[in-house]
Amino acid sequence: MGPVVAVGLRRGAVEAAARMGLPLAAVVDAPPGPKTAAQLADVVHVDAADADRQWGEVAGRLAALAPAAVVALTERAVLPAARLRAALGLPGLSVASAQKCADKRAMKRAARAAGLRCADVVEAEEALGADALVERLGLPLVIKTAVGSGGRGTSVVHHRAEVPDELPPGWMAESFVDGVEMSVETVCVDDQALLVNPSQYLVPAWSSLVPAPLGDGARAVVEHAEAARRALGVTSGIAHLEVFLTADGPVFGELAARPPGGHLMRLMALAYGIDPWEVLFRVELGERPALPDRARQSAAVQILHPGPGTVRTVEGVERARALPGVEEVSVRVRPGDVLAPRAGTGQEAGHVIATGETAGQAEARLAAAVAELHLAVE
Image 1 (cartoon, one colour):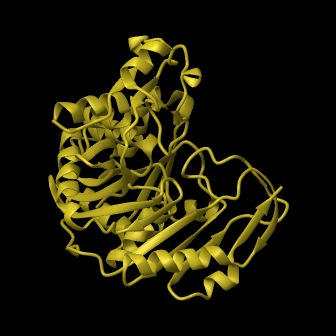
Image 2 (cartoon, rainbow, N blue to C red; image 1 turned 90 degrees about the horizontal axis):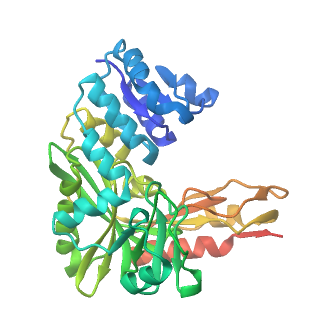
C-alpha cells in the first residue's frame, strides 16, 4: 500500500501514523522540524502565496508514490486536499463539498437549504450599510471572515456605533444566536456514523468537556449533527460541528471537515479509550474500525494564556501535576518570554487536562489543577 498523504501537519497525526507503521507523506507550506521530517515518507512544499497554480504539479509528484488516501489535517487543508483527491482519483470529500465547508457563506446556504436552523447572514457583496445591517440583524450582531477558523477576526458588536459602514470583501455579518455553544465530532465512513461525540464548551475558546452531559437533549443534537454533515457532503472522515442549543432546539453554527482543535482529539482519546488519529486514518482508507457506543469516563481541558506581555511568573506546575485525575499540565513559556494577544483558539501558553468518572468530577479536578498554577505577565 502506498502512503497516506497528509495536507497540513499535526503532531498527533504524525505520531499515530508512526505507531501504525503507516507511511505518511506531507504537503506543507512550511518545512517541518527535523524530528517530524524524520517520521515522514516524503515532504512536498507548496508556496502558500501561489498554491492554486501548484496543485497540478503536486498531484503529479504524489502520483508516483501511488498514495492510498489524502487526509486534510487543518482548516486551510480542506480544499487543497479535495483538489488532490480529484486529481489522483481517490475517494473522500469532493471539491464541491470542500468549497462549501471552506466558505462560511456557502456553508450557511447549504445548511439552510437542508432545513437546518441558522443565524441570518448578510454577505459583504450585499453592500448593506450600517443602519440596514442593524435593522435586518438586530443587536448584538456578529462580524467574521467568510474563510478561516479558530475565531480569528470574529467580533460580537453590541452598539450601533461599532457597526462598520460597509463590510470588507470576504466578510459577513450574522444575527446573534442566544444559546449555549457546543460542538459535535462525528466519525463516519461511507455515510455511516461510527461515533458521535458531543463536546461541552465550559468556556467557549478556553475550556471544554468530553462528552457533554446532554441528557434528554442528546437525540436532537445527534440528529442535527447528522443532518449538517450530510448537507455539507461529509461522508467519510471526521466532521467537527459547532452548534448552539437554544430554547427552540439546535441552531447550526459552522461545520469543519477535518479533525477538531482545542485538544478535543486528546479528550476523545481519554474519554473513549481510542486513538482518534488512528481512527481518522482508518476511515479515510475505507475501513470500519470498531468504536465504543459510549464514553468510559469524562475528560476536560483548560487553555492557559495570561494575556499579552512579558512573562514574569510560572509557578505551581508540579503541584498541579500531582493532583488526582490530572493527565497533562503543559506550560510552554518561561519567565522573560513575550506573549502576543490571543487572536485565535490555537494560541496558548499551555494547557491542563484532567479526567474523572463523571463530568462533574472531571470539571472539579480540572479547576483544582488550574488553581495551583500561577502564570503572570506585565
